[in-house]
Image (cartoon, rainbow, N blue to C red; front, side, top):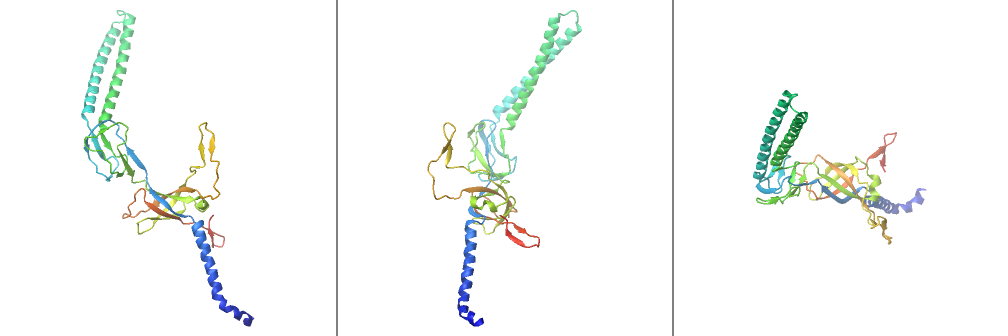
Length: 302
């Protein structure tokens, strides 16, 4: 038996090399076609557009381009003179309405004391003037609160802690109510979006650990899958003018796998790693493995 196998011994290294090559090719095929990783990833964050609640000229700019600011920090101020005058007018209107209400109440009290000597219609008119005065006073007091609010809103504050962009308003600019004048990046909203081919989604689970490598950074970051998008745009279908589906009549025989966004939450980002919305990242999902009754790992969960 040994004599018969002896001619095959020179072929053994070649056979082992072929088996090793097949295993490597299988691993590479799985890695590049089915393994849940992608180079099409990007750092994302919530972008907030800051718009003033009142209109006017910018009189002070307290922030700088690309500055990190805290929530509630004043970014710039709008001319307060017009709104201070409006508050004074509202306070004067309140004083006027209070005086008118006091006079109406005195007249109504006098009519009650002269019961039987004053016509019922006159007494009813007195009570109506008191109710009208109370309503007018409430309206004037609401106008005071609104004027105070407008005066406070002349100081435009940061809605969140984050980073400003490089296009702040300048001294003397006129800003309008509700019109965004700058944008900022919410510092607490940084995450990574990886665009995975649909053929790899069956190997991705909510909560799966993820390795993230941001281009230009020497170290890898850790995270986990937070969510997977439930829908993407269908480029072969659009809504027609009569709200009926407009389907592309041509069909490509070479079908490319669609890419689905997967949101990834980063964990324990080092202080020396600068997260910038839009940076490129490579994302690799570490697949969980099932454990059988004997305690052996059986392979990736699909």
